[in-house]
Image (cartoon, rainbow, N blue to C red; front, side, top):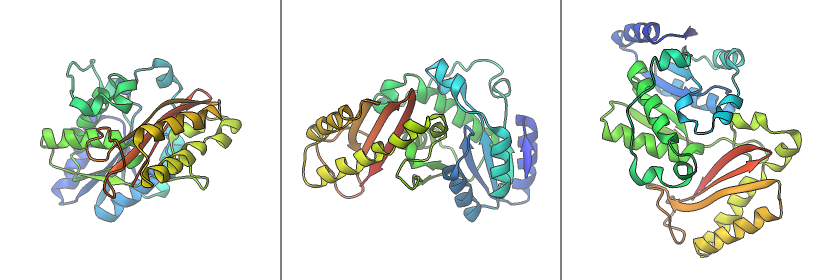
Length: 280
């Protein structure tokens, strides 16, 4: 496994591989890797000659400086996991390498960034758009793999790829969960033992909300139920629960045709912000 820390050496190596006719799969991450990330690596390896993983905690997508400061950085452990997964290339740049000067470009993703994560984390998707577009230009992958736990991020990146005519395919991959249902996330390692024991309530609520909607309940009533659910567990601070169209994330009044309804949630638990979703 090759590990590179600069853009120039990464591009030089990958250009050589592409000239040799090798296809490239790409998994962009912010590190603190877990089984969910490794599943993306495995998906890429099945479909490409070469798999590249980037590890970069992107400062431009954090609207909360304290959140950026606390985000786990575990490069040595991450490299061990990637080596075991037979990843071919790791690109682990510094912030100075990626941003010699602060970017002046601004992305506008329209209504996609005015709901849910975009509403509560202003500027977040601008930062995502900038760093992912830079990474795409550096790596020049044939396919890029993203987990559907970050459903809104996948929608934003798909729009960016379409609007800017990037010559690559976005491959969304299912959310991986712990045995108790908690969505795998790098932020989970920040949970205390007590909070970790409570965290599966998020997925349990999603399942209950799905059941109610499938039985014809209106979205507004399901959201009232969700608020009441968390009042019984005051350790949680519910930020939002939205019921939306899977394709454009616009709010819907009731369940749509199969595969088109997304229930998305964000909640704080012990000072850690957790997100999850379910699509049915």
